[in-house]
Image (cartoon, rainbow over all chains, first blue to last red; front, side, top):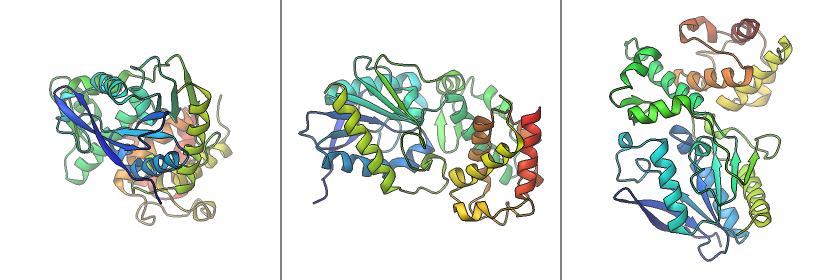
Length: 231
Length: 89
């Protein structure tokens, strides 16, 4: 029988945020930090299949909603990479995470819980993520007959939230994205797609897809890695 | 390290597979004259945003959005020529 999901919450900044869980009774509990913005939606199915694969191997996993995303009652414009990092740390403590796994932009906010072992897949620079959603906004405006420039958007973002690819981002979030690169925690394993994990760059696809073989490969790697370092 | 031109073309082929999800066999069969924008359903204006950023990262180039016009994605050849010119800069 396929492993069943459970739903838990963690408390952060006055709200209960949703967490999808598999394998609650396991001693190893891997907190998964998804990619950010559109990339999160494109990878959701692949990640949940990875979690099922982990549960079948006897490894628990937790996939959190970042404040302002998915089912979150919080307003996205009030959040930033800094508050998301604090939210991840709060979730890790409250849910009893033993390991942290981050994909893409998740690696920008995974380094608050410094004592836990970290695993990253294809970590992304904040500036690349920002540039893509700015281009998406400009392309959308162009189709609507409006001429928008990157410089104009960045100037507007200094004082008020701006809408980028469906996300209302506040000034702190935009400024952090423009400047931040993943910071290395003490215990870190970095995997790259193609070399370590066979799969496809689902986070870049405009149409969400899944990849069962990739989910299985990530689950196998996370199982082996998490068994080798604590938990 | 500068890219040799053949590797630029290889990178563009990989991008079309990775970013757009175009079938590898379709991409392998592309020549300079193969039309892209309007002919490839996977390539819409939203997909272009991701494609440009990934091109910058993989080829280590900067693309000024003012450089981008409709002709850039007209054919496989025009896209490769643009990338090669950027790598040479």
